[in-house]
Length: 297
Image 1 (tube, rainbow, N blue to C red):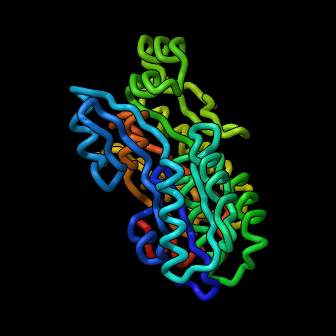
Image 2: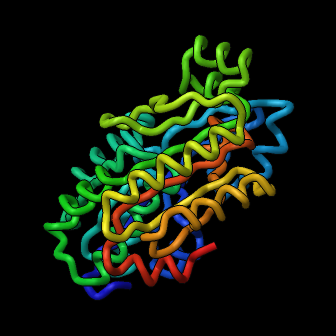
């Protein structure tokens, strides 16, 4: 427990590296994955590989955590000795998790809770969760956390592409027109999250290799805006192409304090399929340098 006794809580869609979450006691509320044979809690009842293995027979749906499950985590944190909490969620433009967290937070008595909307997803959102933990441990007052975390989230760029657009279409994340054009012409869109936290196409590339090279270039270009940056990447399935792309990213961004890698959570895999490679860049707060070095690779 940190000296300020402020709990950090997030949802499974932020893809916080498990080692970091365990070391810093980050409490994770699982999103739900719904199959015809039942509902599974992401990373608790089902793994990413299990989702991938079942995609050929059924593409499930996802749903947000229930208010009771969020409250249960808050109540447990309180029982464990925490006196306040910060909840950092994936984009409100992609999930109602943030709205639900606000509702539950308003109902907590004698336990102040701040809720932060990253307006992002995956490891990009996870960087903001990590920032929250590191800021608290560095002594940043509770009253300042929300503003500082929102500022960092607004400066974070997430980019991702997939080989197969089928899952983004089935989940309603892209239009039918985007799916048909991409599939017919081997167009691989590069997506980010806009100012409202919705997916947006920032570039269209012919083929996977060009998409990965363009993603790296866009990340490197953003990195030039800051004195030091932390890089992050999340992959659905590790392969030689992904490994080469991550190495190229490290080589190109010379002002990075480290590269944090993690796998895609089961709930995000439902919407992206098994071929996703996502990258993120964020200006580095001083405390992140040591954390990124410890987690690199």
